[in-house]
Amino acid sequence: MPQQASRGRGRPKKTQSPPTVAEDSSDPFESVDDGNELEETIVEAREAQESTEPEKSIPTELLTRVLHEFFSKDTTRISRDANGAVCKYLDVFVREAIARAAVEKKGGFLEVEDLEKIAPQLLLDL
Image 1 (cartoon, rainbow, N blue to C red):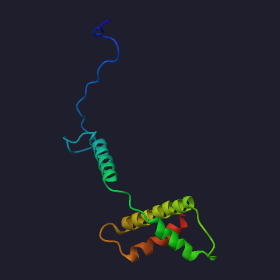
Image 2 (image 1 turned 180 degrees about the horizontal axis):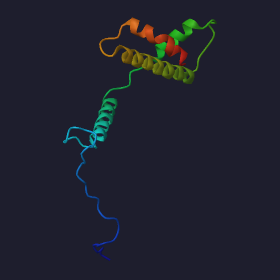
Image 3 (image 1 turned 30 degrees about the horizontal axis):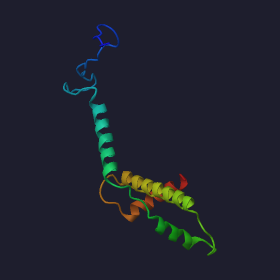
């Protein structure tokens, strides 16, 4: 049986209302939705960057080598899962250190001294 066009049934179609002017702003052309559009743009840019670039992290072979250097016994072993967990933990730790140093510096290239300044608080936050 052919479907008939329904009139007046179901949900009404949504119509877009024009953006409203922010009351606090002195700019009459600024809309309230500008913040949401900016957030959406930032999220889209991050997703595009994540999809195009592989995530950079510490190579597992290097991490295994560094861990074995600090083991007191030569027979001590670490499983692949434990090595992966340590790798992820160090990756988060290094990213946090860089982020804190960048916020503290407020622009420019980071130097060793910048990381040294944030190290005590970073270690206390562990």
